[in-house]
Image 1 (cartoon, rainbow, N blue to C red):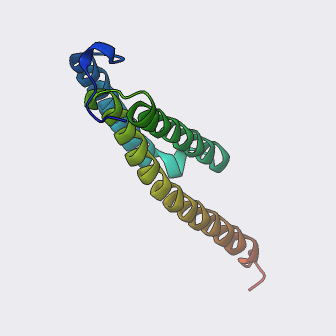
Image 2: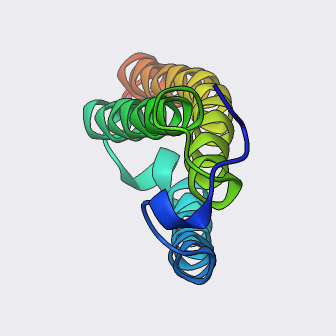
Image 3: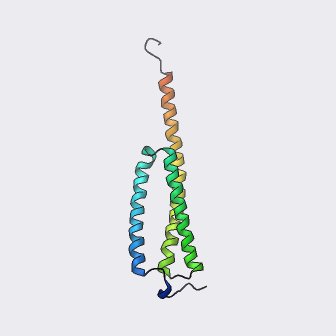
Length: 128
């Protein structure tokens, strides 16, 4: 096993790697910001958690490809590093967001239950 492969047997060039993974990172960061802002209030719980699970699985696949490129296929740094970085950072961030979203969904449901309880138990006109 060697960590320094030649550019001849690389899956893609360094320039392609920088362009594709740079644009992908910008897109994923923007989508993450949108999901973070809009997610809890506008996306139903089942849909939101399915999105997070899907993104977590995609991050895991990216990390797996990165590990394969590093250990199995002897690819150069510009090939395995972006895959591994996307996967590791994605799994960490999405895991933390999943915990935060679960807590936020629980709080939202509790507020909805409290408001329903308040409406149902509020004395009707003439019952005071």
